[in-house]
Length: 308
Image (cartoon, rainbow, N blue to C red; front, side, top):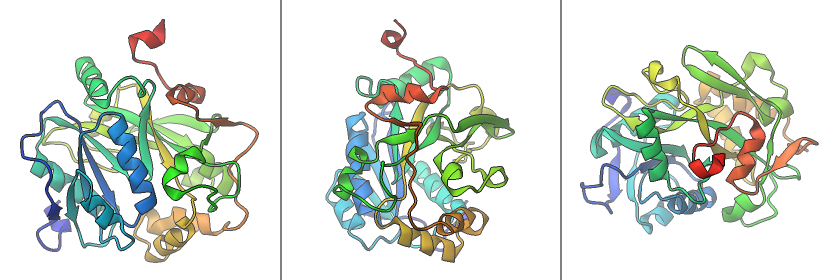
């Protein structure tokens, strides 16, 4: 993993926490580049579900993201290498080297809000304790694409309040398919709208909440060893916010750089159908609270009061 670093790895820009974060506290890790609108919502949402300790790795933002994070109660690092998935895994590993193993981490992207049924009443530390008591080392989530009822790439709200406008999701286009890496979820709004079909149908399963042990190497969708990915229920989602104002230009850059999976194939698919994209359809469901997740079909309840 160290071979991905051109120099010494992430450089610390701000240190808020001492090196004595309690072992039972979940630590959030987020790698970000130029996402000032979404990062504000990510910060507040995860505070609201009980995260006290947040570690950000800024990848040379120049839109105010870094400056805003410097004003928050976070530990902030900076990395200068150009993004690709292997490097991101190395950045996360380096942060875990610093903050320690045999503890829970929540690893999210800047366009993701970690959500579980009952999160309005039960903190993420309660979720981690529940998982530990059940013997789970990883919590399985699915990427749940959120969208508005109007044309994509257009916001009718302040960018930092996007979750009040992007409130719809597909309820009937996801399906489960097991492979050697884990019990995967596929489908969703993007294959439906962009028509890129089963030949390119990215897995939407992630394991963002992970009890990190030294043998583990985090991967964006499937951490290794793969054996730990099996046997845990689907009890959370990552509400996923793409196709907002300003995103089209990002996707053009990603497609040109080719530094995402398959030479940025997915972003190239997006750009084949740039204008007049609408995700909303007759079977879209509205997210009102975490209970709305039960509309998906394979979400599970875990708290005692939910089963009465």
